[in-house]
Image 1 (cartoon, rainbow over the protein chains, first blue to last red):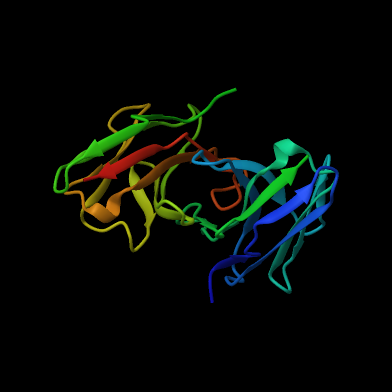
Image 2 (image 1 turned 180 degrees about the vertical axis):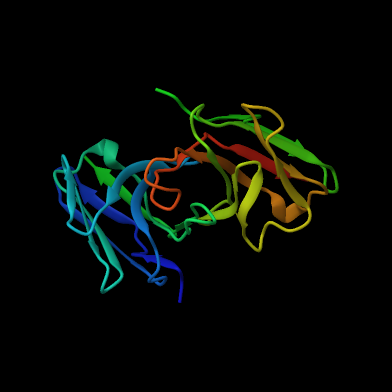
Length: 113
Length: 117
């Protein structure tokens, strides 16, 4: 089983649509969870951290279910500028060893006019 | 806003040559990382570094790879004898010691594209 697995994509949606990404992870000892965004051939940029209670940042909502080892990201009212690859990321590091991010393959989103 | 910087942006080398990729992490950060992304594939962890020593390394980070913090600002990745399969984008990242290295956000540099011919 892959350490972090995401929806394969690509997702092609019209402007204004709501789109949801799902992700599962295999290491139950994982400490922290993130969604990063990556534009073509650029570095990953943090979109948001994901907390067990769920968290929202404007049009973006992230959820974490530790029991199911499942992470989600919801984008409402999608904009053309949301077009990118969305990376589900899990930190499997330990206190003694430092952080270690494990990335999913990424899901490509294309928002069309 | 502070950012991680990397040089060069693109490095072309011949197979078997040594390359050094350079990074300047965010100034108050204490944890440093290298990741790589082969074209079309996912981002992969290579190594983490703290207090002047390696904290953890992946299977990819074999004896051909080394890291160093030669001064108070730079963090380098050296590949001793490059192979064709080392062609990839190499990202440096750093994090600050707030909640702990396993919860802190890692900030990525723009990457160095390494092409091995």
